[in-house]
Length: 553
Image 1: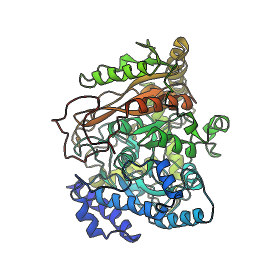
Image 2: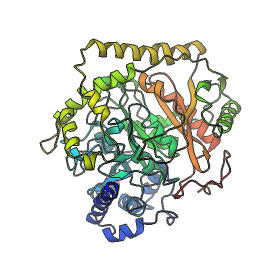
Image 3: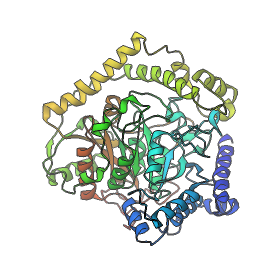
Image 4: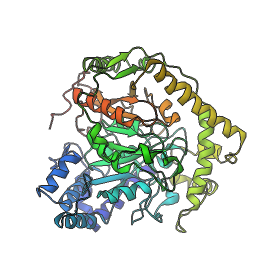
């Protein structure tokens, strides 16, 4: 009952915003959204950012028209009882922004590849506009950030239209270890567009679903440990978890400054590379980005080489295989693709693994408490809470709405931690960096002279389960996440119409070579298919590498 109430509230929040900016009235949106399966043809289905840019400059359409069409798409697919629930709020200023960008193009000002391109950002990323930043929690409902986050400021400067804020696993999935990915008290449960009863993964659930369902041209998610790679894999899109420090974190609700990063989620590697270039750079308020002055690239598309696998040494992390007898044959096909495209394989990769827990959990608990307290203290006076302790109290007082399915055991553990000078914390930081970085990824890549490591990202998606919480199969992103190293997910196949992806990860600041590899793999396979918004998985589909999930566009 609580979830239905939340979904209705969230739906009216989106549809009211749509009506307010001149699109379909809320009643019409609700009627359309009631049956998301088999939507009508969409003018910009599977359009690339580069393709949209060409259309704008050729005057085939305007920024306003493009923005209107994506808003209509949101109204059609996202709200209502069977909607995707990927969007928390549509930007009420989106059309005004688009009009301004049209005027700039007409007067000869072109901001670059993202000029006029509608992009969504996860709702733990501050926007200093009329859209609240809630992290999915009622404790921040209606709370407006005092200014743009550094990455949003970069997107605006690049000419992007900040179209909407996306739903997420509440507090980026760091409230309870019994949570359901993509569920927030503000918006309810985000749904996987390939099968609406399946898990979208998290915590960047809405960003991945929105990109996959063509609700936007591209999206931005955040990751601490798997929150970009997991949703990208289960929703059939490309996700880049960059090196910690490549993208500024000021104005992002934190978990762990050792591991947190934002990153692009798009339908193609090329789009993700374009978006990464706009996001990357030095953030004066984030010391971790100082190396980005020399390491960041303005144009990552120059590394996109269709023959980019030739001569690359790639380690096959077979210790991550074997979690599914349905997935394994498809992974073997991927390995064959790498080899036939000219890659030199180290197979199997004898990877040195050391346990990252409990030290990894200790590090995150300490940093979450200290980093979140600092962030909340800087929120404006309209925020209901200004510390983790106050947040816990708010949740207890509003448990019927905030905690109808799972509690806040992670909060309760983290709030007990002391300052970042505690010996327990300092030891955890040292051990995590050593095990994941120096003695983990770096040691193995040095030993075998590798350009990248190949491993399954995880999936296919399990059924949603608000009673017992998430159940995931597979996944290899923990090591690069703890090390703070880059990881790219690329769609790799389907099992009964449910997508799964593979990961390419490597050393710190190796985004150029990983993009070259990921792009070449994408071009050799071309697995991506748009979702069909089925109510459940199609068990009649054969399990093969190129399933007839949908015709190519």
